[in-house]
Length: 105
Length: 498
Image 1 (spheres, each protein chain N blue to C red):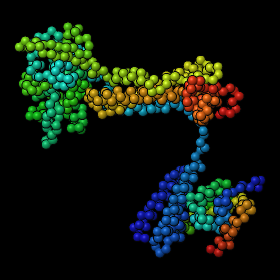
Image 2 (cartoon, rainbow over the protein chains, first blue to last red; image 1 turned 30 degrees about the vertical axis):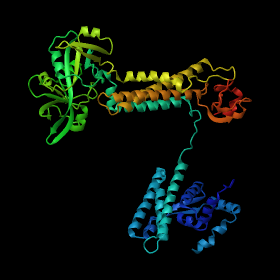
Image 3 (cartoon, each protein chain N blue to C red; image 1 turned 135 degrees about the vertical axis):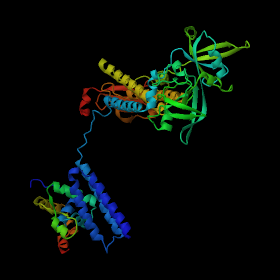
Image 4 (cartoon, rainbow over the protein chains, first blue to last red; image 1 turned 180 degrees about the vertical axis):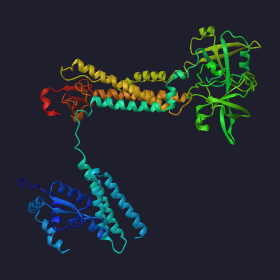
C-alpha cells in the first residue's frame, strides 16, 4: 500500500467494531455509542473507499426468522490494513472495543 | 404503554423513515429504506420487553428514526455537485436588470390576469361620444351628485335648443329585485331614458331600447358584478324575467366589464319611456346628459361650461356642464402625472449626482461612460414600467366600474413606486464601478471621526473586478464633500484574478 488513508476516530471505531464481530448497523451503534445519523453515512464512506464491504442477508434466512433481512458488513483486505495502521494511531481503540468481548456474545 | 399509543408511535416512526427515504437520491432510496427498516425491526426487538415498548424504549427507537433523517441530509449533501461561486455574476449589471425584468414580468402577468386592470387599460372601451357633457346645477358643491329634477329634463327636451341637440336622463334608486322564486336582492337600479347608451356612444354587444318604446316589458341591463354575484355567471341570462320594485323587466344583457364610467354604481339599468321618467317624484334627482350641437362645441373651451337658463318666471337658473374628457382620461394619463411628480420630487429625497469625481486624472473611456448612463436609463425605464403595472394591479384589482378611490390609489402607488424606485436606482448607480458596472463590495471603515482634519474618515469599498476603490466620507467637508473613485492600475490585477 503506497499511502494509508488516515481515518477519523469515528471511522476507526466503526472499523474496529466490524473487525470485532459487530457486523450490523444497529449493533455497531450500540457498541460504539454513536448515533444512527453518524454511523450509517460513515459506513457508506468506508464502503466507497473499499475499506468495508456490505452484503444483504439471504431473504430465506430472514423469512425463516420472520423479520426483515439485514445488511451486514465485513472488512476488506485494505480495511484490515487500514485498521492496523489506525490502532497505532489510536492505541486505546482495541480496549474500547474488545474482540474477545464480541466473540463471547 | 397502551397498545393504541404504541401503534401511533409505530406509524410515526415508519413515517419518519419514509420521509427520510424521500430525501435520499432516487438511485439509493430503496436500498437505504430497506436497511433502515431492517435495523428498525432489530432496534424494536432488542428493546421490547413483554409485547409493548416502554416510554424510554420508544424514545430510543424514535431517536434511531431521527438519525435516519440525519443520514438522509448527509447523503443529499454529499451527492450535491460542488457549488461553483459565480464572482462574475454577483452584483453584475446584467443580474440587476434581470431581476428588474423578472419583477416587471410578474407585474405584467398579474395585470393580464385581473379583469379590472384589463378593463382599465383599454380606455377606448369606455370613451363616450365627443361633445357629451353632464349638466349639473351650480348650487351643488359635489360635481357628481344627482341634482337635476326629471321635470328639467322634460322641459329642456320639449324646447328646441341652440347649444344642445340631444338629451338623456337617468336617476339611480335603491330597489328590491326578485331574481327568481323566493330569491331577492337589493339593487341600485338606474332608471334611464331609452337613448342614454346611444347618446353616450357606448358599444354594447346587444340591442337595447327595442321594446322600451314599443310598449312591451322594459329592458334591464345588469352589471357584470350582479351577473357574477346574483346569477353565478349564468350564460343564459338574456331574456330572463326579473321583478324590479313592482314591475317586471326582461334582461337584455350584461353590461361589459368596466364600460360604465358615469356617476353612480348601478347593479342594473332599466330603460324606460320618457313619460315614466318624467312622472317621477318632484323630489327625485338624477343626472342630465346632453350632446352639444356644433355651436355648443364651439363654446365649450375648457373642462366645464356655465349655462344660464331663463325660467318661466323670468328668473335665471344657473347650471354648468362638465366634460367627460377629464373623467375618462384612463390610467396612462394618471401614470404620466405621477411620473412627472416623482421626477420633480426626486432631488428632495436623494442627491441626483452620480458621484463620478475621482482622485486622479483618470477618466473612463467614452464608451464606458455611455454604457454606464445607458444602464441608469434602463433601470429608470424598468422601474417606471414596474410602477405602471404594479400601481394598476394594486389599484384596480377589484374595481369593475369607475372609482375615484381607485384612481387616487393608482396615483399614490405609481408616485410612491416611481419615487422610491428612482431613489434606489440613483443609489445603486453611485455604488457601481464606472469601469465594469459591478457593485462595489467589502466595505471597510477607514480613519477616525476625531481626526477629520488630519485625514479623511469614512467607508472604503472595492470593485471585485479590481478596477476601482470607492471612498465615501462619513462627514462631508469642504475638501471631501462627496464620494470619490480611486482607479487601480494593472499592478493590482494579480489580487483580483477570477
